[in-house]
Image (cartoon, rainbow, N blue to C red):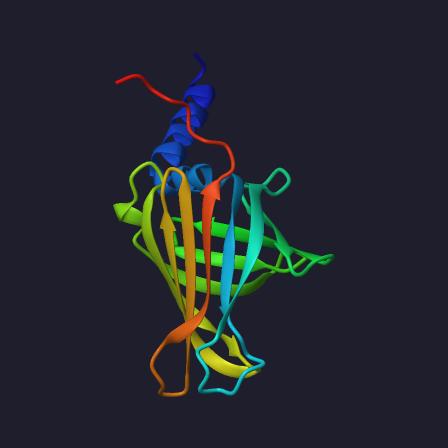
Length: 185
Protein backbone atom coordinates (compact mmCIF):
# COMPACT_ATOMS: atom_id res chain seq x y z
CA UNK A 1 0.00 0.00 0.00
CA UNK A 2 1.39 3.44 -0.82
CA UNK A 3 2.38 5.53 2.19
CA UNK A 4 -0.08 8.30 1.31
CA UNK A 5 -3.01 5.89 1.40
CA UNK A 6 -1.82 4.45 4.73
CA UNK A 7 -1.55 7.96 6.18
CA UNK A 8 -5.08 8.82 5.02
CA UNK A 9 -6.50 5.61 6.49
CA UNK A 10 -4.68 6.25 9.77
CA UNK A 11 -6.05 9.81 10.00
CA UNK A 12 -9.58 8.59 9.26
CA UNK A 13 -9.32 5.93 11.96
CA UNK A 14 -8.16 8.57 14.47
CA UNK A 15 -11.13 10.80 13.60
CA UNK A 16 -13.56 7.92 14.05
CA UNK A 17 -11.95 6.80 17.31
CA UNK A 18 -11.94 10.36 18.68
CA UNK A 19 -15.69 10.79 18.16
CA UNK A 20 -17.49 10.19 21.47
CA UNK A 21 -20.02 7.30 21.41
CA UNK A 22 -22.78 9.75 22.40
CA UNK A 23 -22.28 11.50 19.04
CA UNK A 24 -24.07 8.61 17.28
CA UNK A 25 -25.79 6.76 20.13
CA UNK A 26 -27.97 9.67 21.28
CA UNK A 27 -29.29 10.59 17.81
CA UNK A 28 -29.95 6.89 17.13
CA UNK A 29 -31.89 6.59 20.41
CA UNK A 30 -33.96 9.71 19.61
CA UNK A 31 -34.84 8.94 15.99
CA UNK A 32 -38.28 7.51 15.33
CA UNK A 33 -41.99 8.20 15.72
CA UNK A 34 -43.35 9.13 19.13
CA UNK A 35 -46.83 9.84 20.51
CA UNK A 36 -47.73 11.49 23.79
CA UNK A 37 -48.76 14.60 25.65
CA UNK A 38 -47.53 18.18 25.86
CA UNK A 39 -48.36 19.68 29.25
CA UNK A 40 -47.74 23.40 29.69
CA UNK A 41 -48.35 26.17 32.18
CA UNK A 42 -51.36 28.25 31.11
CA UNK A 43 -50.18 31.83 30.70
CA UNK A 44 -53.69 33.14 30.09
CA UNK A 45 -54.20 32.72 33.86
CA UNK A 46 -52.82 35.10 36.54
CA UNK A 47 -49.08 34.79 37.23
CA UNK A 48 -49.74 32.96 40.49
CA UNK A 49 -51.84 30.28 38.78
CA UNK A 50 -50.54 26.74 38.45
CA UNK A 51 -53.19 25.73 35.90
CA UNK A 52 -51.84 23.45 33.21
CA UNK A 53 -53.09 22.49 29.78
CA UNK A 54 -52.53 19.11 28.11
CA UNK A 55 -52.46 18.50 24.35
CA UNK A 56 -52.11 15.21 22.48
CA UNK A 57 -48.84 15.46 20.57
CA UNK A 58 -46.98 13.42 17.95
CA UNK A 59 -43.27 13.75 17.28
CA UNK A 60 -41.14 12.36 14.48
CA UNK A 61 -37.38 12.70 14.82
CA UNK A 62 -35.19 12.02 11.81
CA UNK A 63 -31.90 13.04 10.30
CA UNK A 64 -32.10 16.56 8.85
CA UNK A 65 -31.00 16.23 5.24
CA UNK A 66 -27.54 14.82 4.78
CA UNK A 67 -26.12 16.30 7.99
CA UNK A 68 -25.97 14.73 11.45
CA UNK A 69 -28.49 17.32 12.65
CA UNK A 70 -31.91 16.08 13.75
CA UNK A 71 -35.27 17.39 12.56
CA UNK A 72 -38.03 17.34 15.21
CA UNK A 73 -41.49 17.37 13.55
CA UNK A 74 -44.24 18.11 16.08
CA UNK A 75 -48.00 17.79 15.49
CA UNK A 76 -50.31 19.14 18.21
CA UNK A 77 -54.04 18.37 18.50
CA UNK A 78 -55.21 21.82 19.60
CA UNK A 79 -58.97 21.42 19.59
CA UNK A 80 -61.86 19.70 17.88
CA UNK A 81 -60.84 20.74 14.37
CA UNK A 82 -57.42 22.34 14.80
CA UNK A 83 -53.94 20.88 14.52
CA UNK A 84 -50.69 22.83 14.77
CA UNK A 85 -47.32 21.81 13.37
CA UNK A 86 -43.83 22.86 14.39
CA UNK A 87 -40.40 21.91 13.09
CA UNK A 88 -37.13 22.30 14.99
CA UNK A 89 -33.64 21.42 13.82
CA UNK A 90 -31.26 20.31 16.55
CA UNK A 91 -27.49 19.85 16.50
CA UNK A 92 -25.90 17.73 19.21
CA UNK A 93 -22.15 18.33 19.49
CA UNK A 94 -20.97 15.62 21.88
CA UNK A 95 -17.34 16.75 21.71
CA UNK A 96 -18.26 20.27 22.87
CA UNK A 97 -21.16 19.17 25.15
CA UNK A 98 -23.57 21.46 23.27
CA UNK A 99 -27.20 21.05 22.22
CA UNK A 100 -28.14 23.75 19.71
CA UNK A 101 -31.41 24.69 18.06
CA UNK A 102 -30.92 26.01 14.54
CA UNK A 103 -32.94 28.57 12.62
CA UNK A 104 -34.20 27.93 9.07
CA UNK A 105 -30.90 29.15 7.63
CA UNK A 106 -28.96 26.63 9.73
CA UNK A 107 -27.52 29.19 12.15
CA UNK A 108 -27.53 28.58 15.90
CA UNK A 109 -30.60 30.21 17.45
CA UNK A 110 -30.28 28.80 21.00
CA UNK A 111 -27.43 26.80 22.51
CA UNK A 112 -27.29 24.85 25.75
CA UNK A 113 -24.57 23.10 27.68
CA UNK A 114 -25.21 19.35 28.01
CA UNK A 115 -24.44 17.49 31.25
CA UNK A 116 -24.72 13.71 31.36
CA UNK A 117 -23.51 12.61 27.92
CA UNK A 118 -20.75 10.43 29.38
CA UNK A 119 -23.31 8.58 31.50
CA UNK A 120 -25.54 7.54 28.59
CA UNK A 121 -25.69 3.86 27.72
CA UNK A 122 -26.67 3.10 24.11
CA UNK A 123 -27.96 6.69 23.93
CA UNK A 124 -30.24 6.17 26.92
CA UNK A 125 -30.16 8.02 30.22
CA UNK A 126 -30.73 11.50 31.61
CA UNK A 127 -29.31 14.73 30.20
CA UNK A 128 -29.55 18.24 31.61
CA UNK A 129 -29.38 21.18 29.20
CA UNK A 130 -28.70 24.63 30.63
CA UNK A 131 -28.50 28.04 29.03
CA UNK A 132 -30.42 31.25 28.56
CA UNK A 133 -33.62 32.09 26.76
CA UNK A 134 -36.78 34.13 27.24
CA UNK A 135 -39.88 33.72 29.38
CA UNK A 136 -42.82 36.01 28.55
CA UNK A 137 -40.43 38.22 26.58
CA UNK A 138 -38.04 38.57 29.57
CA UNK A 139 -34.50 37.12 29.73
CA UNK A 140 -34.47 33.86 31.66
CA UNK A 141 -32.27 30.97 32.67
CA UNK A 142 -33.40 27.73 31.03
CA UNK A 143 -32.99 24.17 32.28
CA UNK A 144 -34.25 21.24 30.24
CA UNK A 145 -34.13 17.65 31.39
CA UNK A 146 -34.20 14.91 28.75
CA UNK A 147 -34.91 11.37 29.88
CA UNK A 148 -34.24 9.03 26.98
CA UNK A 149 -35.30 5.42 27.30
CA UNK A 150 -35.68 2.60 24.83
CA UNK A 151 -39.38 3.38 24.34
CA UNK A 152 -40.01 6.55 26.37
CA UNK A 153 -38.87 10.14 25.93
CA UNK A 154 -39.50 12.87 28.50
CA UNK A 155 -38.56 16.50 27.97
CA UNK A 156 -39.10 18.87 30.90
CA UNK A 157 -38.36 22.59 30.53
CA UNK A 158 -38.04 24.92 33.50
CA UNK A 159 -37.23 28.62 33.50
CA UNK A 160 -36.05 31.15 36.05
CA UNK A 161 -36.46 34.91 35.67
CA UNK A 162 -34.12 37.25 37.59
CA UNK A 163 -33.21 35.73 40.96
CA UNK A 164 -36.30 33.51 41.15
CA UNK A 165 -36.09 29.71 41.42
CA UNK A 166 -36.72 27.49 38.41
CA UNK A 167 -40.39 26.86 37.69
CA UNK A 168 -42.19 24.43 35.38
CA UNK A 169 -42.71 25.73 31.84
CA UNK A 170 -43.72 22.64 29.88
CA UNK A 171 -43.19 18.91 29.61
CA UNK A 172 -43.51 16.32 26.90
CA UNK A 173 -44.04 12.65 27.66
CA UNK A 174 -43.78 10.36 24.63
CA UNK A 175 -43.77 6.65 23.93
CA UNK A 176 -42.61 5.06 20.69
CA UNK A 177 -45.42 4.54 18.22
CA UNK A 178 -44.09 1.11 17.25
CA UNK A 179 -43.66 -1.33 20.11
CA UNK A 180 -40.34 -3.12 20.53
CA UNK A 181 -39.93 -6.59 19.09
CA UNK A 182 -40.99 -9.20 21.63
CA UNK A 183 -38.28 -11.54 22.82
CA UNK A 184 -38.76 -14.99 24.29
CA UNK A 185 -37.94 -15.54 27.94
